[in-house]
Amino acid sequence: MDAREVEAAMLARCAAAARGAMAVANDQRDANVFRLAAMVVQSRFPFESAGLMQASELYFMQHPDEKLAPADVVRNGWVSSLPRLRDMLSFQLHRH
Image 1 (cartoon, helix red, strand yellow):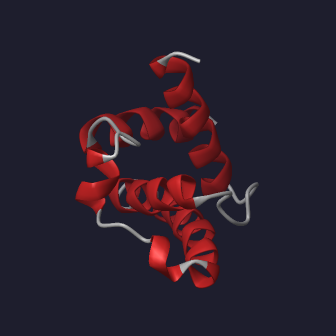
Image 2 (cartoon, one colour):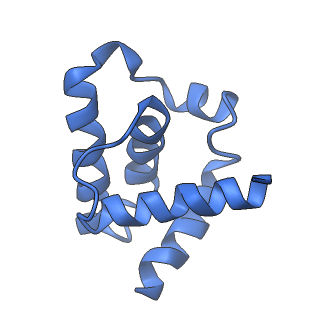
Image 3 (cartoon, one colour):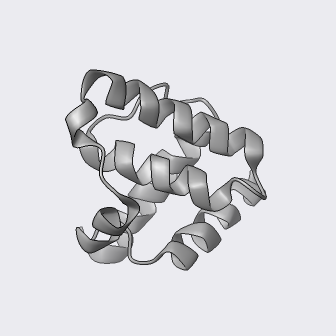
């Protein structure tokens, strides 16, 4: 998969978690991205933000040592930038 496909898949997982279709994150990467996504969409999508945070926190309850600071999520390349994450996820959430 190229970078755009990876990003699209990540956004689809975020949207699923935001809508409650994914109860818990699958892995460390998803849990940290969900947590960060919850933070960046909270003001515009509070219900969806809560779904993302819940999916993240349920994962971290089992793996507390895997929670990273937001800067580390970006540094690891899991998110290209916070504004892009906010804009792309907002588009996904607004669309449905």
